[in-house]
Amino acid sequence: METVDIASAGKRSDLRGHIKSPQMFHSKRCRMTKKDEERSLKKHGETSSTKKSTGLNDLPAELISEILCRLPIESILRCLGVCRTWKSMIQNPLFINLQARKTHDQPSRVILKPIYGGVTDTNRHSVFLLDTEELKSRQIDDKSKRLSGLQMMSSCNGLLCIGSDKVLGPVYISNPITGEFVLLPSQEKARRLLTHHVGLGFDSSNGNYIVVRVYTDTKKNQVNKFDAIMLGENSWRNLKVPDIIAECTIYGSVFWNGALLWKIKKEEGHECMLAFDVCSQKFEVIRFPAIADVPNDFEIVELDGCLSLVQVCDTQMKLWRVKGDKIEGLTVCYEEMYCTNVKWNSSLYCEIIRGHIDEGYLLQVSAQRGPGGAWMRSLTHFFPKMEQFLPLNILVPICFKTVAFRPTLISPMQLHFVPRSHRR
Image 1 (cartoon, rainbow, N blue to C red):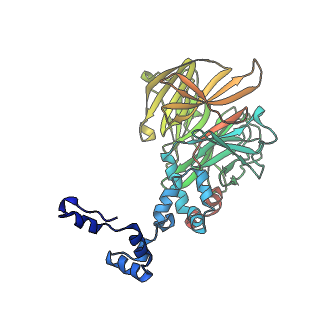
Image 2 (cartoon, one colour):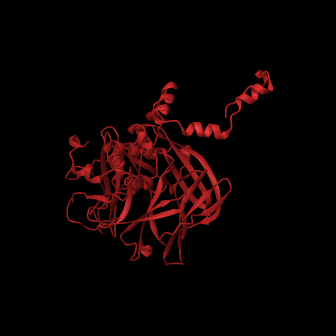
Image 3 (tube, rainbow, N blue to C red):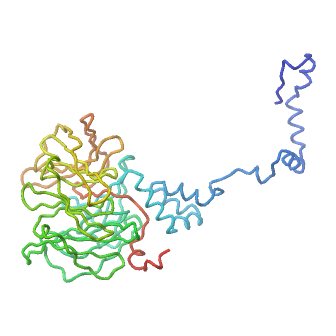
């Protein structure tokens, strides 16, 4: 309806003249032809094409790509079925690499694999991708059935490194989201080992992925050996390590800031870290200053992009922060101590899986059913400021191995079988 400034209306009759009945307005609008409408739009600087509503597909492809790459991986997989244009976009290596980079700006997810008493006929060949915010669990079946009986050992950019903790092979690099995997070349006939652990790292300077394994052979005086292979290479090579490492006890591996890191222990009270720079492919021993007072039973954990040392003992949880950008200049300083009000011991202990978005931590709690009994594991949030635990109400196996995980669409097959110069 047309509006009128009453103050400017000189007479009452003038005001009545501006008011039209709804019937008159409706009948006049209905008599407007398509040509009249085009003429009216042109008068106001518009055309019939500009009048059409704008949909998501009308946006620039670069903008659509930026929107899609920020979605959870489950939503991205559903978008593959929207249309051919989106499917082609999502399968493009440029989008895959962009999405992989964006995952580092988001909280990591958790993936778990049933072990020991947690293995059943229905999950023997499966892993579970958890959404701890939405309290959802997605069971991902391994159709090849080759990963049964092996352990998840490390993760990098959505790729899992899977192998045995007692023999050198087989070692697989798998993307559970796409279902693709590659079997790394065998070095020699499988033999029993005291320990065997495999770490996976990424060299951002050239886009290469490197696999490093450390193992202790019972037939060679329990000396630690390190081997490495790039995805795309056809043989492992031996790595030369500092002499101090030869007879140390080595625990796990964490990939952080361009380096693989292990906790090493030569004797009681002499713990430190070993770092392997994936770019220079050199080792560095990182010793802790006495003032930091780092205990001998710490664990190395990446929390929200920061490297931390964690000790859970008695009723306390202590954290030390590792600071520095280069491996050669890292320092360690004491950061925080929390009271958990739980007395932890050898039959009831916890490990930090990742930091929680609400200033808390996601814990994996392991409990033994009596002396010599079976182990059970569960996941729970711990909020230090409130000294409160909040169990994660997600259906999971009773015993499992967890790994912090950032889902991507990166193809291990393309990384391993396609020469880098031919990758798009």
